[in-house]
Length: 633
Image 1 (tube, rainbow, N blue to C red):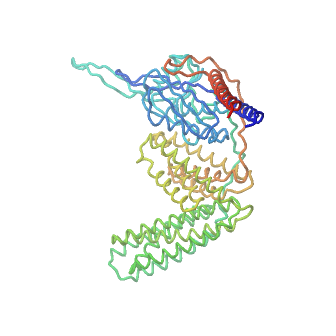
Image 2: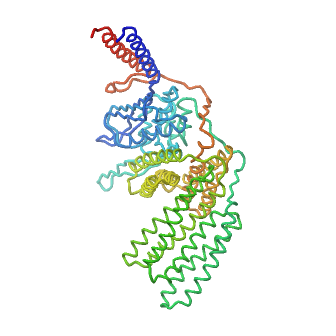
């Protein structure tokens, strides 16, 4: 090889590697933060301290967790969720970074996700290059939506934190009063009894009286960031009263009402003239009575403009009428199944044919509603086959009626999708990528929540996740995306409501927050030029459940409204970086050295070490290349 050419190649490689090494070194500013924990001893539970060092470096989205003493799965799940939330809040693509979490403690700590909030704060600080105020410590799990969830052992954690001379102790919202176990020694007739009784403790008073520490309640990670760094991301505020209406469904609702009234009257007459036992007739008559109740509710809701709610009630009415209809005509269920399958397949073919005509976000949202309902129709068709094969006529006719009426709603939402199709065509490849990302996020949240509450408690989330994957494989990407959203929401509400206990005040606050978040999401969509009609449907349905004091479903629908409103936000307007608001200077105090077993370095020392190591490797590599270049053949 020509010596000049060899030298040119050597220099090119040298400077390229030097640049990569320098970039890597500059990107490895680590953040070390302390988190209170609980350790189990022979005499009971005591507080302990974790030292968590987080580094974010250019990479491929890998997350590495190094713990000593060893911890349970929830620490790894917390790290993954911390990255997910941090990416969403900062607007950074976390798949372009590798994250390293080094967790050290002087004593073994019991499992628990209570460091999740702290890990999220540290992850954001590492990504943004922010300093941590070490006068502050915090306990609280991280929820998928960025809120801080409840934890246990707060008094023990406060005791341990106080030894480090902190000034502020952050706790999850609603946990300034906790219940501890008090051991009492009592003497009764010469017998000494050791009794353990529950005792309520005001954490604010306890901390101030014993340590002079200020206890502050938190709602979300953004609040925590403010106390740890003096910075927070600007939050969208609701401007005036957000009006939500579903008038675009008024025509469909009125048609459905009239159809159900006529259908009910027709089947009622047929039932009266049917030749069957009196008790059998009465039993079938109950289905028609239930259907009539739904019709009456729908009529009332239409008067107040709740058209989506009324359509949902009329859908239920039609199913109950359909059960009687199918039962009265159940002479040949095998033929009925064949006809129904042809009907569903026909609608499926129509949907596939029209999919290419979809333009704009509103049309896309309605398409997703159609595809999701199509899967319901197929699922109930399969159930009907199983019931017929097992000679279970009553359940078979219910499944047939449901599949048949659900198939009709597929056409309803497909027609709406075509009606509101305007603007630019949506890329199928973009939809496929979006669906895949949502499914991966849902998997992460499912694993995280199931590690804390058990798989049986999140069975609905697991089913929605399975549905998302099957829809993705079938090429119905909008439906896959919405099933993934559904799985994510089911996981989230499971952990949030289970940790809230039976306190109606806490649950009420959560519903209020979910309602406000949904309003903000709807407002954001409108500001970007489109009306999030499907999100407004779910918001209206949430209000309906809230009026019925059905907290779980109200919470679910408001969360669904928010996620649906934001599902395709990036298509109309690519996301911009969040605005950082500095409200007060961050005070950074020296962090005491971590346990000697850590072997960790400070951010500057770590960067210097990487730079020296990288430079040495570059020098070695350059020497080998130069030797090769000038060595004779």
